Picture 1 (spheres, rainbow, N blue to C red):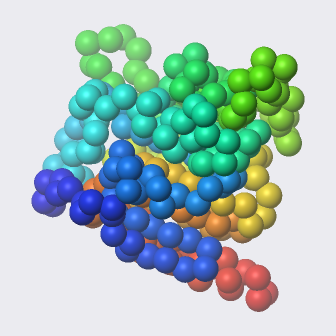
Picture 2 (cartoon, one colour):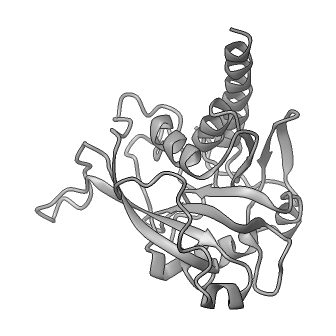
Picture 3 (tube, rainbow, N blue to C red):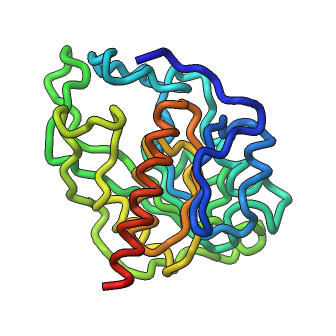
Length: 258
């Protein structure tokens, strides 16, 4: 598989329907950010963590763009929720976000969170990790947060009582193993993403993922009856995401006619 080749300025739409859009683009590109619909309903994103992931299967997966520790992802995501001083751009006021790989204290200020919680994804499998350590990684952090645009509302406690469904903070979903993770090295289970989406949105709400990978979040959104809007910087993964979203829309449409 070829190494990463950057997208054009402003991105390129690979798939678009009345309910979904998949863009091959760089989520740090201001022209791409400006295309995101104002007042969308949920941000659900798994940004590269800067760990220099190496799957050991270079013939299967490309290196993950942005996974070298050089990108300040909280600052990037702040543009997607709407930077300080904006009240209509980005994520709608008092709506939710889920960010994989970060603690709430790292995101509270840049993402203007009125309330937050640290969730643990129990992957039910032990990864390789650093073999010099006696403990192998078997979980992943997820920050749940409520985006509150006005500082005065955050001071008053806005967003602290926000959950539609109150559940435990440890989420038990097996991760795709080496044989089944064929689309992306960090592929997330649809069941996990579906539960996050259903806990924080209503049908027809718009779910946004600026680091879409192979499109699992977008697929989960479509299958849950939501709209989906995603961006992926790697052309190969973006094309996979586009194909998966189109297929998911056909499945969702068939279910509606049953």
